[in-house]
Structures are given as C-alpha cells and as structure tokens.
Image (cartoon, rainbow, N blue to C red; front, top):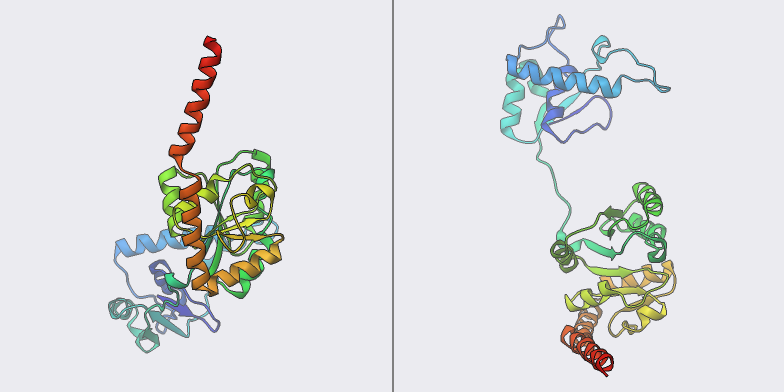
Length: 294
C-alpha cells in the first residue's frame, strides 16, 4: 500500500499500509474507523517503533510524539491489489474515492545484470579497493553493473577500511568468506572474475574462473600476465580507467566473451591439470626419498 500527502511519498510494504490509519483524514469530528483488537495491537507496535525512530531531534533530544501532532491528511492511497483495496475501504469507507489500485512494476532483467566478482583475502597486497571509485562512477552511468568483493578477513585493520569504503560506495558490495561450493556457484553465475592484486604468484581464482568458463579481467602484473594473455585467454588492464573501458567492451561484445571463455578454458585444462601437478610433486618426493636413502 502506498500513500501520498502532497509529496512524492510511496511505501512498498503492508506495514506502511497500516500507517494510513494515521494519514487518511477521518470523518467529520476527527473519529477514526474502528479496528479489531488484533489489528490495533499490530498498529500500536508499528506506531511505537516509528515514534522511537522518528521522535529524536538533531542533537539527540527527543522530539514531540507523532501522536501528539495532527498528521497532514493524505491526498490519496494506492493499494497493490483489489483485495488490499477492499480491506482499506472496509476500514476507511469515508476514503473510498481516494483509494486506487496499482500493482508494483518491475524494470529489471537478470539477463541485463552484470556482476563482476573480485575474489581475494582482505589484505593490502590484494588491493581490493583499487577499482572501487572507477567502478562506482560506471555504476552511476549504468545501474545494472555491480562489483562484488568476496573473501575472508586476513588483515583486521585493513578489513575495517574496506568495509567503510564499500559501505559508502554505490555499485560495490562486500561479502564474507564462502565455502568452496558456494564460491564456485557464485563464480559460475557472475559475468566476469576480476583480479586487482599488486602482486601475485599464480592466482587460483583466475584459473578456477577459466575452468568454470567465466571470462577474466586481471591487473597487468607479471603473475597475472603469466596466465592471462591479453585478448586471448582474458583481458589485462593497467589502471582503473582501462579496466572500465575493457569491462564495458566485454558487456557489449558477446563474441569477445565467447572467444575469451573458450580459449581460457582450453588453456587452463591443457596447462594446469591437477593430475600433472600431482605427478610432478610425487616425482620430487621420490627423488628426495632416494637421496636420503643414499
């Protein structure tokens, strides 16, 4: 239910529907329509919670109770469904002419939502804030792009800095550490994986993204350039502005996305087999064991 009292006020939950008891002008004499005890109890709790939230003036002082002030009469009310309108008309028959029906509209398609996932432990060398400002500017232009930072707290002090920055930045979200299965599910369902590290040995997140057929955008540092060949197995950027340019290009060029995914997957499965890694370490251990016996 939604109500407007001369301004652009809209409320998107049934709780606000109950608030109309205080905002729709009653019949002559100021009487309010009767409500059943259960409904009155729920409304009383709602009003008290609103008072607790809204009754403080700047500086911490308590302001006058909202029940002590006569609220401005609502010019109209909007119900999401016919059944909600009928309930409202039963409670406020004097306001029938003010109540309209309009269901909520949705203007968002999951197909047009682009999630860029940055997977890293929260510490300085991973530099998770490197792209935040540039990405937020892009989000202001295109609200369907988001960057989500996922990873465990490694450096507590730096983690607080990241949390504070993300909290006041549009288009960027911070998620804590995930179990591996959940993380892989997130990787599969994101648009691209991002690496913004200052230094890397070899990023497991990049290799896992390639194996899961997800495109990769990585900061152009030696460790990343060793596994990401620009415009072949992924995209390399040297600064935040170049990242945004390449990310925009990727969202608008499905053929590029398909090619990067195909070549990245082919590369990681050919060059980063876990069986080959196991065989190498087993051989090294056998060699070490042999030298000890000698």
